[in-house]
Image 1 (cartoon, chains in turn brown, orange):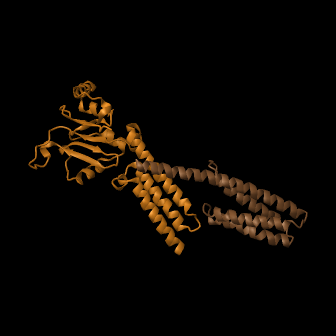
Image 2 (tube, rainbow over the protein chains, first blue to last red):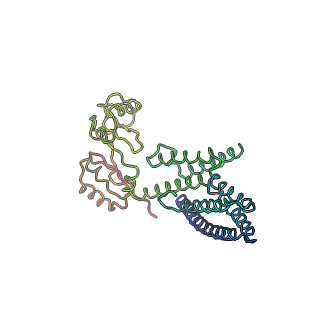
Image 3 (tube, rainbow over the protein chains, first blue to last red):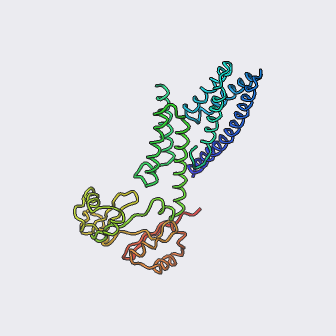
Length: 123
Length: 221
């Protein structure tokens, strides 16, 4: 009987952790989208606050990546990390690819969130 | 290199823990569900070892989930005979009084060669020597020799006919066994009435076709 209770406990921990992780990812994805939207709109007007927004994006992604690395494949996490590392340079060089890289980050974060949702289609 | 080594060590510990958690049942012959779990665990455990880019948790979580579900399922099957039969199946009689049940063999997709091979491994070379043989839920064949063919060992000789059948299993009357033994439910009711117990108070009752029986009552408390 001890084994049964232990298993119930383990399954409950996994379930609660899974739900918590999905909620956390949802919040992170939302926050990243807000930061990206802000950085893009500031960059369009060449506002001096753009660099601040990019810095915020970089530091937020760093904190998210350190947690995501426990659950996501290194390929997915490093793919977004590479795009995050490029955007500051692209903005300084006034390169239009800045916007497309922002979309790469948005898409990557969204993919992490969607892939953790318990849905039948694989997104 | 070091990461692969450490991952292998951690997963080894996890798999040993998982097998222990499944209990001694796992260490003997495997039931169908246990066989599936064992194959799945061995496959899942290799993923994080082979690919350092795969997070360890993607190996740990499914292994623990599968093992826990297996333990819960085996606990549930202990309580329900119906569920046990659904998950593990039930033993099937393939030889009765030296005669092969061909219909049953076809259903089980067993060939006569498979049966003969299993009997030979038990030192039986002639089907007609077998009183009764069953294919267990693990796929193993158990055979019971006719009394004339049983080795003489100085102990009281076995009664002739089929070996005893389980007629009450953990409170449930096994009607199939009663029918096989050609005994009626009335016969069973009379015995239980004489003993002043109900079927629910019986842990195990076995009976033979000659009407002899043995009852093990459930422990109280």
